Image (cartoon, rainbow, N blue to C red; front, side, top):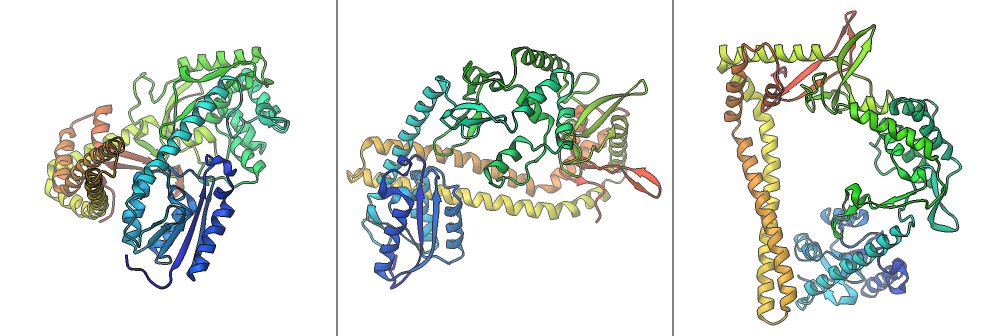
Length: 541
């Protein structure tokens, strides 16, 4: 890279909670910043901006200020990035190498890691890949030690979470001990009492919402003075929240931990664990619920679970439109439900989001099962007859509409396929360089084998992704075949008088159900059927 007299510099500082908790003076954010600013001032370069990610692991690149810096690079505001050392940029050697070897050069950005004597404008950077490997190995070792320490503490009954369960706070004298939160502990007790007396989770949630009592998430963020990171998350009580609270043994005085685990120290992604793997220690803190109330509540929960029908209809089978009928306003699934009125039984579908959270988030969108079944059946019959009687006209209409959708899908797939191909070429280059370094005696066999294994694993994943993308691209390009095939399929159903689950799944992608509204003095409701491959047949030309 050709050097120039001056640069527009982006200073990047990072400190992870794992980096000695900032106890090492040279690692602190303030010291990183001052070191880098002095370096820039001595050379007379222009400071464009300072980017700081405090408390973020180097194993992930999903860091807010790092992403902001990349945005400024793409916008041409920065042509030089400086960090204290390579580990501040990242501890994932594959991703770190991708930025130093490909992303930065692509945008003509020079990169300097001061303490590692790394400068992309110079030719003597061969040692950088090995430092990146060591940085990752350090992060992996730290992760294992922290995990082992936390597991031991959990088995001792210490609370290891960052946020206590609703109804508790950490003791001021012992952060590993839970004590009742006087502001909301009575709400928890009340929830258990109401359910034990026969109230449903949905009714309890409605009562709390009507009284303006903050939900656990809202209460937590209000108390901490922070803004909820996900503005789309419901801020109200829902039946799911109530039931989750009722099942938590913490309110019986037991500490239950290990419900989730991290899949990889690189991604920090967490998954649910089997209940057999949970760490349960009894009698670790003051309970909010007595044993008798707990037993009454859980007897009710077990009884309800025996009679509960998940996604089933009155016949006990999977309901006809399960996973297909959607609320037209919020997009949530419509759930099958049975209600009794005036001595009669009615089968309906209603918005699941309303069922969980009530009218504060959506309306009920009730549609009788019989009406939905009749509407879909007639629509299939009519389109089947049209496919038989005037196939050419139907195909032409569908092709005109589908071509627009096809072009958008084709561009998306081609972009993703291009990204996969570029990354594959990058790994080929990295592998070749690794072979050359090993041949020159610069790479130990152990490191060579580890690197090659990781490269091969990623190559295999990329090959699988490329195959899927190519198949999807071929499918999207074969619109004529898809439309023609759909017409052949639906034409078989001109004479049907009963819908089956197989017919619905074979033909239909989704059904959107609107709320009832009044038009010309009459109650109406829109039911929009989106067929597979061809979408809605009610769209305008």
